[in-house]
Length: 113
Length: 112
Image (cartoon, rainbow over all chains, first blue to last red; front, side, top):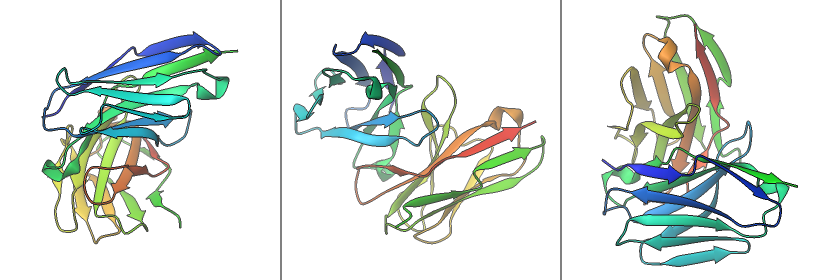
């Protein structure tokens, strides 16, 4: 089955710096790669996603890149702000097998003011 | 719209007791999922239902059972709770195909 690895587990940056979180997946059939943000005590919420027919997607300060050959995808947050502090999860899903979504272990991002 | 609603929000059980977590969605979504969240381990898929009438095992199904009661409702049952099942449980739903998951607020379960 699918396995998603995520690094780093903890990331601390200064306000205004960039943050990068990297994930790898194992199943080449995966074709949908979402990123979720979870604030303390809250439910995970989608912040950006990318499908396998696209190499990069950007939405204001966040961007995601996908390398299908290497089975890598990454989240980039520019000009970080204290409100970006949260746990971020990458995930992988596919069009077969009931569309189940498998998550990475998460990255706790701290943005220091 | 309420989205995805889970009950109860908090529950304390003794080892060996049983309980059912209820989940309902009002978005007319086809697929529903149960995840557990433990510190440092992310969200792990317990069971999922791709459509009404079907259920399948996820990554960590042992000790759990599920029922897709109808298109709206997907329940998770612990027949004989164990301390290892202490966790936060999230129900989620999505529309056709792989896409955004909409999560409930979570249910915090403690097994003593």
